[in-house]
Amino acid sequence: MEIFSKMPQFLSDIIEKFFGKNGGSVLGVDIGSSSIKVVQLRRQKGRAILETYGELALGPYAGSNVGQSTNLPVEKVVEALRDILAEKEVNLTTRNCGVAIPFASSLMSVIEMPAVPFKELSQMVPIEARKYVPVAISEVSLDWSVIPQDRDERDDKNAPAKTEVLLVAIHNNTIEKYSEIVTKSGLSSTFFEIEIFSTMRSILDQEVVPVMILDMGATSTKLYIIERGILRSSHTINRGGQSVTMSLSKSLGISMQEAEVMKREKGLPGEASGIGLKDVIVVTLDFIFSEANQVVLAYQKKYNKNISKVFLVGGGSALKGLEEVAKKSFQTEVVCGNPFGKVVAPAFLEDVLKTTGPEFAVAVGVALRKMQESE
Ligand SMILES: Nc1ncnc2c1ncn2[C@@H]1O[C@H](COP(=O)(O)OP(=O)(O)OP(=O)(O)O)[C@@H](O)[C@H]1O
Ligand SMILES: [Mg+2]
Image (tube, rainbow, N blue to C red; front, top):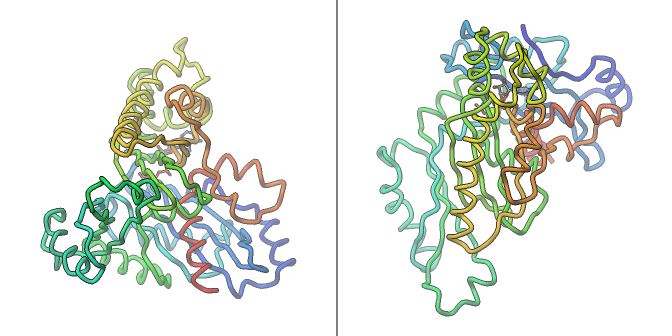
């Protein structure tokens, strides 16, 4: 089994000694396309203590490589989950969890409704939603919330009276699938949460101005624009970390496996057979960042507001040298998201967590919600 990042065993022991056995521990589970990430937290005097975390590559369960994305049947996902739950090195001691649902399995839109009283809106939204949901409304679980107007909009007497509503739909089949995964792997989950909301919880700090989160996964990169804690816009770009590996493999005539190792070890500053890796990798990054920039510009134009910061998360963004390229590509501040920033962890683990952190944004966010829930 390929376990990448994990808490050193002796640390788990120390934490157990300090804080006692884990009565109130909670688990956040993120089943990504290329790997499963788990984070176990426990509440202590109002703070979240990091008990353990781990990542298990899914590629090998699909007969492919580490780092490659998969589309596994339920049984294989269950097998992988059972493996990581049983893994002594990760030492997960609770099954009490929340589970993230992929953004791709959800449908999200911001829709414009007339400014009518809430009661009336409650009747109108499900009917209006039919236009946005490509299947029968009875086949999805629908959720929605009113996006509060900001002061400028409220003060603008000439603005048309409208209400913006964030609409979220998840297909019932998806919920059934995840329920089956949870039950069969021996987990006990109290909620499913679309991964965006988990990432927002672990990464953001009450920013008032619009910010963007860029989550670079294996085959895709997800973009979320958030303003005053509310999701305003979301997009998917069909390139990710695996696209980088693929271009290295093709240009250098090496296997995907070799390319993956080279990518992780050397990154952008690397060189192989006289070829600068940067030249190969930058093509994919440029594609991603220029699409992301278009999304930023479109938002700025529509709402007349600047995106003030871009947070990089996801395994793909762990690529050495990526941050510098991102900084040159965006006209705004670019930072690496630090999901472990909201949890208490031993000081000497700080550097490790900063490097592996971005990958765990979703799992930490789920665990934080689970912890709040059990308050
Ligand atoms: N240290 C590293 N350097 C470069 N790339 C890395 C590094 N670690 C992981 N990656 C890449 O990150 C990608 C996986 O990212 P991540 O784990 O966020 O995806 P995922 O959550 O499984 O996918 P998705 O969110 O799209 O379902 C892989 O392509 C992998 O090669
Ligand atoms: Mg992911």
